[in-house]
Length: 248
Image 1: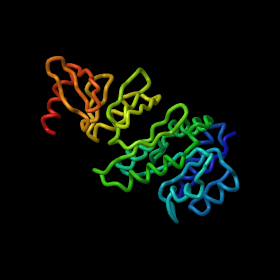
Image 2: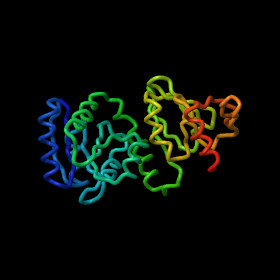
Image 3: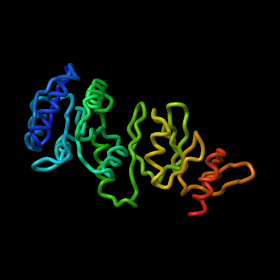
Image 4: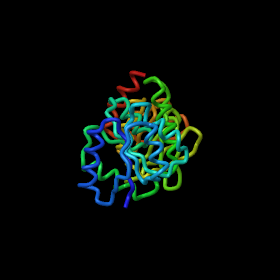
């Protein structure tokens, strides 16, 4: 059984989540239901849960105040939030699991059942630090993105990413310090996330940081980056790239 704590300052939401878990997650047992930072911290220490469904805004603080009490947390955290769009982006950049209110039972079941896989319980503090950094920065400030590999969790400043390359269900990040990070997520997921931050999709296989573009060769439709990398530009992406370069 997975031991679950539900932490939300609204009783109706706590009761609704408990009913959903009973119906769609037979392997989950709700061991505590809490409404504040203080009671949640106490419940975690008492019950040693596998999963905590954690509200962001609580009566006496935030869900992040709870997690600051557990810098080496070994439980899975799933945020339950009604935050506006900019905060959803911050969750995604930081690789934190979240559910939007009103909670979809199917998404709740997926998130909780994933907790049986221990990988996401590790290095939670890195993700939280990244999230808080992104929330404190202005919309034009440098963002940090959490990249999970098989063995590690990397926190990378978005401005240091030169380009990304797709390889089926994998994506390789090429960084300004010449290092590479390979993650098991598709390039399309990062395309949606990074394009608002001066990235451009030039090919089915390539996403490029415009800050590192040095030259576009019209003769053979290739792009030269500042690290001497040469990448092909697809025919259907050429016009979009030219318009973007003209606006820089």
